[in-house]
Amino acid sequence: MTDRAVPASELYTDEFVADPYPTFARLRTDAPVCPVSSLRFDQYLITRLDDAKAALTDPRLSKDLYGPGQHYLRIFGPNSEGLNKNMLNSDPPEHTRLRRVVSQAFAPRRIEALRPRVAEIVDDLLDKIVPQGQADLMRDFAIPLPMMVISDLLGIPATDHDRVLDWTQVIRTSGSSRRPPEQERAAVQEAQLRLNHYLADLVQAKRGNPADDMISALIEACDHDGTLAESELVTTTFLLLFAGHQTTADFLGNATVALLTNPDQLELLRAKPDLLPQAIEELLRFDGPLPVASPRIATEDIEYQGVRIPRGSIVGVVINSANHDPEHFADPDRLDLCRDRGPHIGFGHGVHYCLGVSLARMEAQIGIGALLRRLPDPRLAVPVEQLRRLPAASPFRGLLELPVQFS
Ligand code: HEM
Image (cartoon, rainbow, N blue to C red; front, side):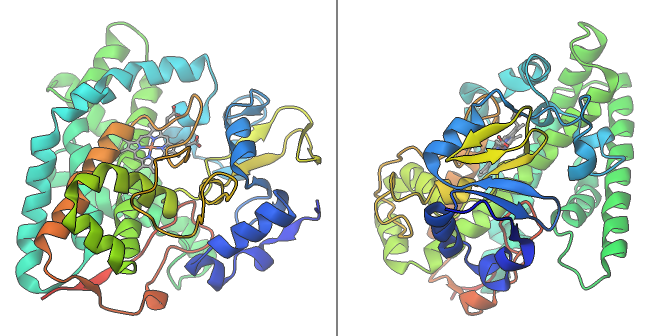
């Protein structure tokens, strides 16, 4: 066991980006709590499932990034408050208040009512793809599907989808262009600023002309019962917009690759579509889109696995490692769609457990189910090693492109 800081260059190699699971296995055995000098910030990584669950419910690990410690400066940088000071970056009681305002809208029964609309969006997207015989399934399916669903829910007009998507994609793919880092950072800041202004303007427009959508409901909570401050209208909308499509898009891409590279499991699912709900859980365990939970801060010196984590440190709970912990999942690197759901933490754990879990499951079940039904003999158009992925510095695990052919 070691508490030697692992330099980013040692951990985040090209091999790691392509397949991080051997590295996670090594960390779980040799350094289950490991200080890493990271590409974006230094942090302690927690890689075993029991520790991960303990950390995600440990009150000494705070999510209050915009409180007195101003920890956001190390993580998101200055000027991030306008979008990121939201429930995900706060502790109870603030967190409880912010989450309660929107939690009703994400209750399973409400989400179930969206099923026909989600199926319609999926069918429209596939109607365009199927006759072509090939597609970039990220651009043509995985990204637009959740983007259209969450935009409908929030009340973002269809005519604005393209530009909103342009801004969120600049944020999502940051670090993957050939531009120098300063230009890249400037492009992200510009996109964030534009998105911030766009959402603020949209809120103002809806204030004068409310509709049956979530932004109008948030305005009601702000203006009539005071549960939400004006600035929180925008930060909450941004969180729902970004969390609502980013992770789902990357998940749809990762899940498709997992199925295409495990043809026995693909065939199994085709033959037994009733397995879909269970299969989605296994696909999420197998290669989830959020490899590390959002950063936590140690509010005092704490100890995990005999490693002292000093007060003020950033702690990253490695969800994708915990979900491959052999103490809890037999043969963890094997995709087994018949596996019991088990204790995976792909949707998090504790008070920040994914608010959109029912929506994410529904979109994935309808989306993956339709791909299997409607794409005849789908296969990757390039070898799996050549798929272009989000860079190591990205908080997400996902693909830049997913070229697929079908007959
Ligand atoms: C497959 C898709 C998805 C995955 C894997 C996923 C995963 C997660 C995880 C792991 C967390 C906890 C993060 C942490 O503790 O640091 C989280 C939180 C959250 N998710 Fe999701 N998510 C998905 C889809 C969605 C969707 C569709 C929405 C809809 C708006 C959504 C909204 C949220 C929100 C608002 C939070 C913050 C909750 C809080 O702070 O209390 N997610 N998600």
